[in-house]
Length: 295
Image 1 (cartoon, rainbow, N blue to C red):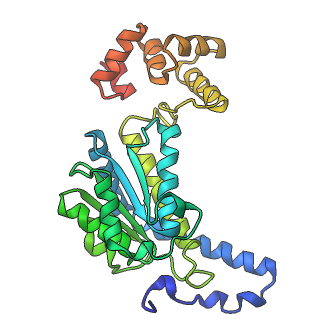
Image 2: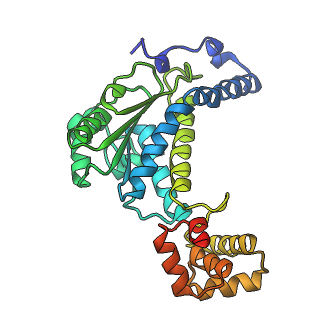
Image 3: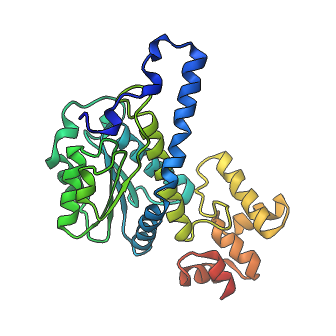
């Protein structure tokens, strides 16, 4: 373990327990600022990964995150948030955590050390060669993730490994290894800190830009947002107003005519066509509005 950067002691916080609260917070803030700079160094690799995820997703493949502890929880979180943001199905982007759902709030002893469990969880999803499995492990050595990646490769699925150590073990089992060296943690070995922040930022980038490339964003607007509550309904109406340059009453009427389908409403207005014709245009262009309105 001592050769892992994530397990090294941080020279800046050797006497953390003796610092004033303000000094401790200042150092934590300074250390956190290293994270985006470390990610900046791997953007070319991340770009290749997102090209892969967008390609496979547009063909009907799934994105499957898997990890243990903080890494697993972050994957589950990112997958869950794609449903309302991008109107994906819960089965399109999936988060797996060692130990199952209970492990989201309670440590499940030994689950992350089980390589077989990683493979079993993917088999239970009926993994196919169309899918992309993204293993997440700050240490880069979690057996659960390694087992999952090995199984994924054995059936021809595309594999990505995200770790916060260089020359990590999980990188050996991935088609697209991504290693982000954020340096030692403020609290030695507590990878929920800088490592967790790095993983969260990376997952934000993967899911968001993948969905952008798959036509679920118009300019910088959430054109595929799922209006599951009052706030999101208001957001949907506001998006129609912005794109179509109409008032809120007109936007609401258009939204209703489109059966609360944001994309259909926009294409109806911009092309001056009815609901059926708008649906046909979108279907012919894989749901990408800008292509549909130019056809």
